[in-house]
Amino acid sequence: MDEQDAQGFARGLTNYGDKDFSVYLRNSFAASMGYSREVLKKPIVGIANSFSGFNNCHRHFPELLEAVKRGVLLGGGLPIEFPTISLGEVFLSPTSLKFRNLMAMDTEEMIRAQPMDAVVLMGGCDKTVPAQLMGAASADLPAVQLVAGPMMTSRYGEERLGACTDCRRFWGKYRAGEVSAEQIDDIEGRLATTSGTCAVMGTASTMACIAETLGMSLPGTAAIPAVHADRLRAAEASGRAAAQMIGSPIRPSQIITEKSVENALRVLLALGGSTNAIIHLTAIAGRLGIKISLDRLNALSDDTPVLVNLKPVGAHYMEDFFFAGGVGAVLRELRPLLHLDTISVTGETLGDRLEQDPGYIDRRVIATAEAPLEPQGGLVALFGNLAPRGAILKRSAADKTLFEKEGRAVVFSSLEDLAARVDDPDLDITADDIMVLQNAGPKSASGMPEAGYLPIPKKLSAQGVKDMIRISDARMSGTAFGTIILHVAPEASTGGPLALVRNGDRIRLSVSGKRIELLVDEDELARRRSEWSSPLVPPEQRRGYDRLYASEVLQADEGCDFAFLQPIAES
Ligand code: FES
Ligand code: MG
Image (cartoon, rainbow, N blue to C red; front, side, top):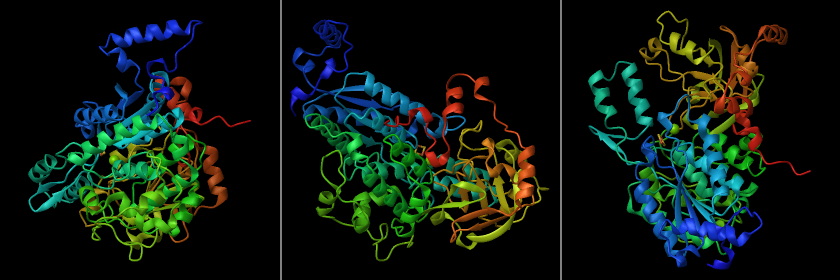
């Protein structure tokens, strides 16, 4: 590395007229931390560490951090760790998504404000990687994403358990009376037993694969289990790569491009990845002025096969995906569909990467493009009078017998209404009905929680009903499955047509036609609209972050980013 290009502690100094004095002052305070004069001349690699006692997935970050620091030193840089907020998926209320943009702002501003020449981003749990990539894209300093890596699976009797698809599977059995209270108590203690992110192709793993495909992580690192020694080697290599980027900087804006975003969409579709990832990728790309249209998603989905046989869609777990060949194997299968001239943090093109020896590929886990699991991508966008700006269905995780269907709407007007009535034995509902949840979108009080996976009413699950069509403006956990239509835009609480659905209305779903229609005539809808009023508390009556969130959050098709964080259009 060329130390001339680095600015170390002198980077970003506010110059009050006597620059040398400012440098002298900075260095004297830096020296108070015990650095020698020689070390103070080194370029600095900041390490954005999202360790938190409230984030089980990042439990191993102290050990990983040591390896990153070692790599930075080997690369000729000075590693300096700094904390950012952390988002532990299950410990945040009302929902982690509400805080993704806050973490992105924290990450962006601390990269910008503090003296560093490059940065390693340590994240993993669902919202942390998108938050870090959004922040890094806006700050546009050379950056390497290091992910936590997935948890290992556990056992219950003869069954493998992995958070959190199996959490839901067993809970469904418990609700149906197939598993006892003692058994579910035992299972609770066995579902998540190591550090790392959820063990299936949920949001965290999908985003790790997307970060690698974009080129923001080192090749081959997305799927390494959290507790595997290779994860420590990946951490060391990430630190080293960040230090080495300083001499000839490669910026996120050179890596995250229209082409690499399209490659990432292909991989998302081939993974049968999380629905949340479409929101996150839209937000990350949006930071660099790259738009993802849902029509484009559908066009890519039409000719991108599902290749990866992982839960929640398939049979296996992330550790199997790692040993099967990981993201590299998927990229090789998709090669004819990919842009090969995109670059990664290493400076290498995707084409160069795919020239290298593919090694062993386990075909039980990663199918060939010639004999895929599904001929079309895992996600599809639906449009129609119920979702003028689109909705998302994870068709690879849905029941195909429900794909062309008309049914009667059973409407829940809020999360509270759902909780109060869904298990009521007197609820007027059958398996052929379509469950609708309103007012759970991005601007709602709940901030678009993972509530789109509406529970099957107890009286129906006791009859053996496993899936029904469910529609909402909410999200769904990446580890969940079912015929679940999500992210309806515009959302109900801002007056989207979803707000106008009433009990007994007919709704028609056509996955082949990519349509979701409310079969109510225009006059009646106009009458309902004239009677509608927003349930939202206006921003002026809120305070703090909640107020900022309420006034700035964009709809799902725009990635739920804040309007003011979008790049300023060039005039
Ligand atoms: Fe962190 Fe699932 S809870 S990835
Ligand atoms: Mg999740």
